[in-house]
Amino acid sequence: MGVPVRFTPLCGARAEGAPLAHLLELGPPDASLTLLLDCGWGGAADGAAEELAPLVAALPRVDAVLLSHPDPRHCGALPVLVGKHGLKAPVFGTAPIAKMGAMFAYDAFLSAQSNLYAPAPLRPLLTLSQATQDLSAYDLDDVDRAFAAVTKLKYTQPATLPGPRAAALAARLGCGGVAVTPFPAGHLLGGAVWRIEVAGEEVVYAVDTNHRKERHLSGSHLEGVTSRPALMVVGAASAATQPVERARRDASLLEALLAALRAGGNALLPVDTAGRVLELLLLLDDHWGTAK
Image 1 (tube, rainbow, N blue to C red):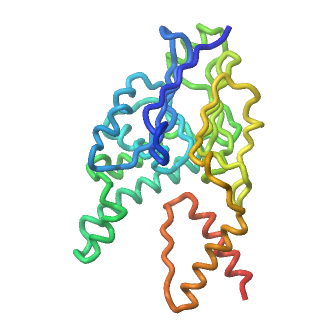
Image 2: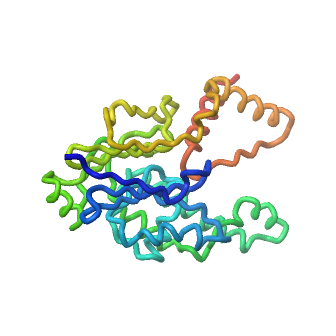
Image 3: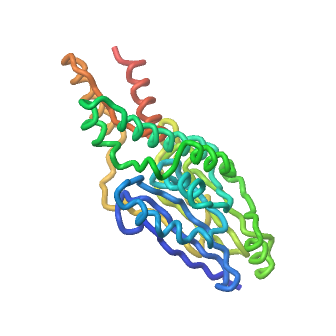
């Protein structure tokens, strides 16, 4: 017997680079289980209530949350939902998602706060990158509570979802439960592709994957996740982008950096808190270690 599957994008499905949040409902309408797939938020002070409204409205139905990556685009709203809106459902992610998600949230909060108290000459510069953060949305205690509560799974480690609705659905379908398993996404450290299994049906959530091996990350291997899923959710933000050979991309960056340094200048590289910065550091370290 097939399992009914309903997928509802809350945000991020039609705008490139927008925060992601989706609902996945498994089972018949009178006994369904609802998963929140990511809970991204950009942190904009203007229109924050409107941005978060779909997430807040869905909370009473949410039985579990799956986080795919640690950056704000995928889990930026978690401190708000836990600290200010009473999210009680279990949250699942890898250990790096829990740790680095908290680092991203700390950095966003503290950077915005430093903007408030910065010397007047520096405020225009800081405002360019930090003025969108709504300080009233959450505090550092909310960050600690939210990410400390994440159930941390290793890659390929399955977990059976807890709760009465998960148990009721399993009993209704005559199966052992609803299992969720993370697999490497290859995009950020700890990033996950999620496989959700119930009564022989599989759903795969695979947004922001990278198939190529890099310096510190192995590429994703979607062929090892599933063979014929009932539903597969993927991202298509770079579908029309022509891939650039990594060696040429790296050489172009190093050439620009070295040109500035050799001219007696400085190079400022704006990077994220705990994501692609690791790849950049390894590139620079390798170059400085071998350059003559």
